[in-house]
Image (cartoon, rainbow, N blue to C red):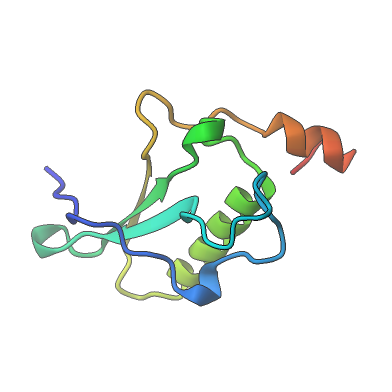
Length: 111
């Protein structure tokens, strides 16, 4: 059985995507849409990627995808990580797929 750390580790500043804005562009601080949790004890070496975009049901928007890619790139270099688990912080939802707003505004059909 996996034990989850009591708190999510916030992504280091270098992992945060700063080029895109959320719908509320006036907000200066926001909760990361991707959080990383390293498990300890007998589960050391297992890292969870926690998806946390409740208002969009974890839809794949620009910020979400950028944070995810940056976290994966950083974790790839970490020799302590043996297993990655993807979890949703949104109850009853894993991922809603592509964000319709992002898909329609990009014109490419891709976020």
